[in-house]
Image 1: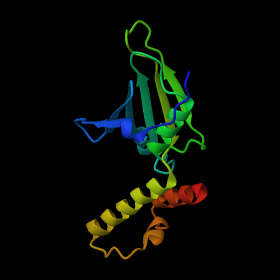
Image 2: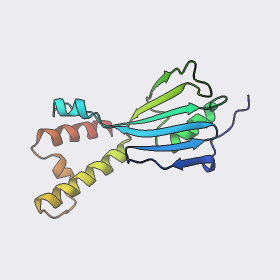
Image 3: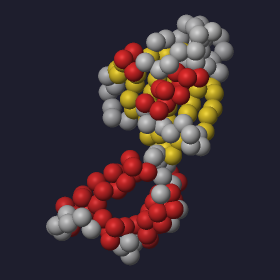
Image 4: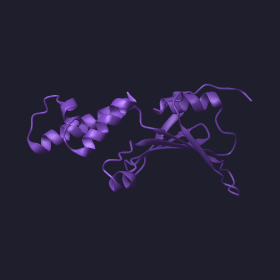
Length: 159
C-alpha cells in the first residue's frame, strides 16, 4: 500500500442545508465535521460547564480508506490537534455494499477557537446591556455569575 500525504486541493466542500455541519468529499471518502455543544450536560448544572467538541466522521466508499499520513493531515486541516488526546470510535456497516466503516474522531475544541467564541459572546453581552465593548473581556470572565467564573477557571487551566 502506498503511504500518501493529505492533498488539500482534493478536499471538496459540499452544500448542506444547515450550519450544523460541514460536509466534504476527499478521494473516495465522505467527511462530516460538526460541533457537539453538550447542551444537555451544560443545561443541567451551570457550575459543570463542558466545553464543545469537534466531531469528524469519515466513511470510505468503494475501496480502502485513507492512509495514516493522509488521515493525520486531514484531521489537522480540519482543526484537530493530532498530538492532543482524541476519542476514536468505529461504526461498522455490515452488509451495506460500497460503504466502509465510519470512523469518528472527537476532540475538545482548541483554546484559540474557544476564546474567539467567548469574545464574541462578550461582544453580544455588551451590545445587549448597552455597555461599550472596551476590551474588558478578562473582567467579564471574572464577573460574579457562576457560569463566567467556571468558564474563566477552565480556560485558565487549559492554557
